[in-house]
Amino acid sequence: MANDDAIVLSFGDSLLLKSDLDLLAEPNWINDKLIGFAYEYYEREQFNHSADRLALLNPSLVQIIRFAAAGDLQVSLESLQLPSKQFVFVPVNDNSDTSKVGGMHWSLLVYVRSKQEFQHYDSFRGTNQAVAKKLMDKLQPIVQAPKGKLRFVEMDCPHQENCYDCGMFVLANTEHLIREFVECVSLDVGDVVNQQTVSDKRRQLVQLITSLGKDSMAELSNNDKGHDPAQPLSAAS
Image 1 (tube, rainbow, N blue to C red):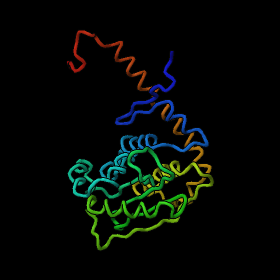
Image 2: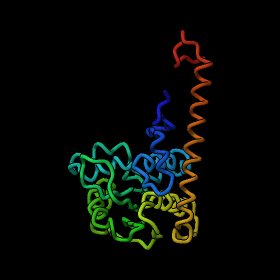
Image 3: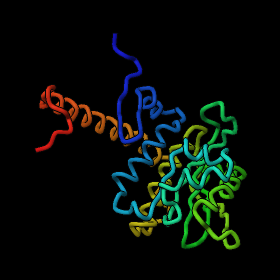
Image 4: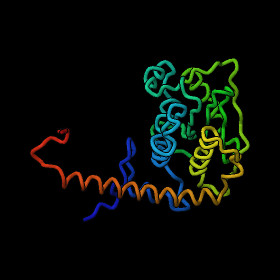
């Protein structure tokens, strides 16, 4: 019998199941795995030309940062080289129960080094502000921002028109802001991101995940056909 919740994509550190893909159909809340995949794709593929300037934090890592002791974070996050990044994108979730997955609302926190600001983009304005401010305090020493000059700014940004698209607004805002910050796109986020473009983004993500999944399966199949079981995979001419 076929697995009803089969793997649809393995991409870097992201592993997506059919049940994750199904969440991209309205009216579903997307989960941390979909946000984590999109962030990994942005960093590794779509915006890899600016990887030295950008950091996009996985939602599971953000939860660790929220609840871990401050003294335990610096060494464990050293490999991310956050003090050298100009822009750090942080998906914020209001879940305060570490024993459960998910919460009620997603928003976006962005550290902009040139302005010494943590900018908060919340599609339900102000809903996650308290959580985001506490997260800023945890991130300040990690990104090595000067505490005396640092500001928290609640940004004017597009609002969702339903109760389930907060995570999708995080992705749409992230994608546009990266273009604005590193590709010099002059349009404001409010001119580009709206309820319709967010709905379109759901379909685009389905197409992307499906396409990448087919490509990875085809590559695996070709590798299997061309591989002599008697020879190690690492053998090189």
